[in-house]
Length: 301
Image 1 (spheres, rainbow, N blue to C red):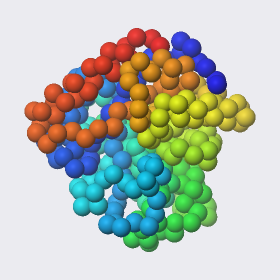
Image 2 (image 1 turned 45 degrees about the vertical axis):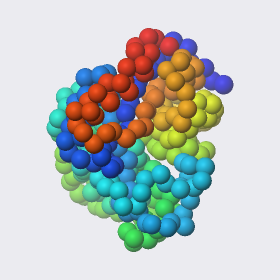
Image 3 (image 1 turned 135 degrees about the vertical axis):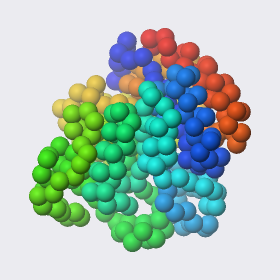
Image 4 (image 1 turned 30 degrees about the vertical axis):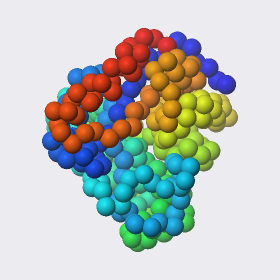
């Protein structure tokens, strides 16, 4: 295990917006404001453009291969949902967890992400993944095969658009010449990107193409093991592991695990939960959820 003692104070994130009751504007406002007040570091929102009633594709983050969200549930676009949350808050960070990048036009996503970053005052992180639902790709008219390569290329093209006043790019999946895309990201024309996915290839992409990794629905032991693999990949590729953020959404554990996770290199634990429908109850729900985790995270681990 690659241990990093006394390097980080653990951050606590909240993944609760955009689905079901968490898609209602009054609940988003209540949760976002309460999360900021109660010390959460970041609000996360995930994406699916479409769901189907009986998918043949296996959901990779559950043992039974089934996504736990009903196909008929409301599921907001994460960039729009986070834009709404940004308007009701002032300090808390925002992240997609994750946006399925190969399903989108990268020029449009570059503009949307930079817009959200500017409007939020530089609080946005773009979390991306390659996707798992062949049915969703088919509905969008995007090839399912090659989505990993497409993701890597799209990120390279988007960074060109963010960093250059007049940008050109020539790739397998996208090309443009001498275009201007504004606004630029708020902080030095570079918008932080984290890579989702729990497998070795996702970890490799996090090291070579991103600024961090987001592990979803992992146990504490899996989080420690994956963080160790990530550190090893950094060493192989000559990249300082300190350059990467490591966020994990856990399936088990309690605040007592924060010290072990921090020593393993994890920088943020993300709580995944569904808020109640009543906005007043949602505020109390956030407070109850935050109390043990944020108190434990205030202590240097």
